[in-house]
Amino acid sequence: MRRGSVLALVGIGVVAGGIAAAVAVLLPWLPTPASREAGRIDFVFWFVIGICIFIFSIVVAALLYSIVRFRAAPGDDSDGKPIHGHTGLEIAWTIVPTVLVTAIGIASAIVLAQNDAQGKDVLHVDVTAQQFAWTFSYPDEGGVTSSVLRLPKGRSVLLSLHSKDVIHAFWVPDFSQKQDIVPGLTTTLHITPTRLGTFPVVCTELCGLGHALMRSEAIVMDPGAFDAWVKGQAQATTSANPATAGKAVFQDNGCGSCHTLTAAGASGTVGPNLDKLATYAAQFHQAPASFALTQITHPDTFRQPGYPQNVMPRTFGSSLSKQQLDALVQFLVSSSKKG
Ligand SMILES: [Cu+2]
Image 1 (cartoon, rainbow, N blue to C red):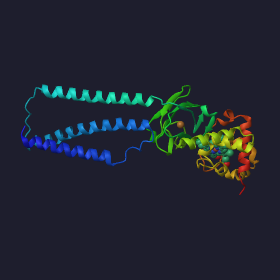
Image 2: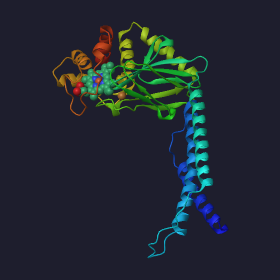
Image 3: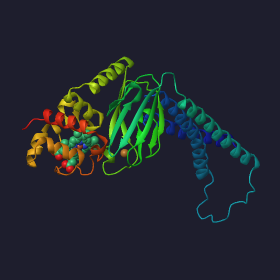
Image 4: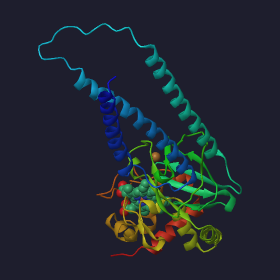
């Protein structure tokens, strides 16, 4: 090959590779990793992207060079010279991809094994998914339950995921991992949070009408703050005071992700604002307590215009005990104001 051709090929390859690399690096494609596992997954991702950019440059160089250099003269309809292959090229394009794909396989296998390896003092969290809410409970911490996923920074966390109805999927983009939640199966996911902050928890399996609303939050806290939160929660659940017990039921069952209720510090907007429960009950000529109980156990009995139907979970009538329902209703009625 002439020296000029080699220079042209290399030049095109460098420019194409540079553009592809700029698109890959300068645009914010991925969230900043918030867990050790996410960092490793990102490494595999960039490793593959690097290889792809390298191959892309070679292909673009050969393609553009050939289009210009070997184009037919206008009016030249003759066939090209017959070719019988090129042994050297064939060996190269067999060996190089084999090496690259094997390297990707090895890197992925190492990362998968590292990501599944649990650290010392694992924190167990039971994740329950149902149409269309998340509940997180901490079996090692006396069964504390929450509608947001609170995690201590730097500790190995093992999620055990269960579904009460259909297939859901757990995803926190900043943790990079996704896991299906299948009825009748317990799937697991290992996470080691590395960054303080609040990150979205998203259901990524179309699970029904309220799928898009099936969201919560993962809050990564300092280990000290996490322990203090666990202590506070444990006290609230064991408290004999019905108002506190009702508040705990509200917070433990994901109500706050859809409803606003000032007394519970909840600001959800998917369902009606429960600060106005008394007003809503009056609209339907109901006493607030029986109205609340009916709507919790049989949602959509009274249709509130402007709010979606079949979105509130249907399971509270069976999943909550009579005491829990009573405490919850009492808490809602005493927290709402007429007006
Ligand atoms: Cu879902």
